[in-house]
Image (cartoon, one colour):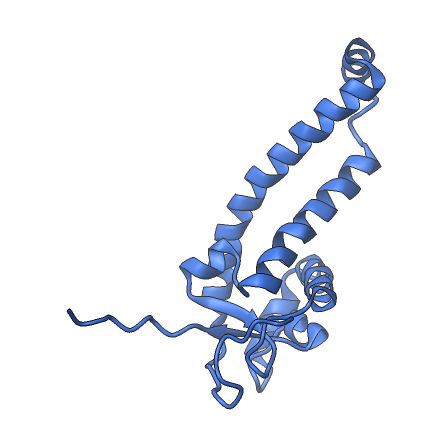
Length: 165
């Protein structure tokens, strides 16, 4: 069941391109750590299945330099990382720092199919030299390709109100 972040009739302002890019930079650093750990686990498992000596010989011969199974595994790991955060809290760790959140137009969390569409279009947007994100500059609603493709929004989260004691 989707999580409601705010009342349906409340409209939060769209997140700026700068804040989105800063959140992406922050998340990129976290993703490097996630990919290192995932690669370590994959390599350990592969070496165990093949045999540690055989795997060492394969590595020294350069036969595992381009492993399509590893590439696919890392792609799925990244999707699961982003998908989990987007569907549960609407925010990755980088998005939390910069107070931006992905959500549906009605203020609810996105679903896994939307997360997949956002993730895939994010790759397309970057492979197009970032044009998918720069599109916000010309879009009347400040939406990127990922927003439009997944029918979601990236909004600026208001600062929490301080409680008086």
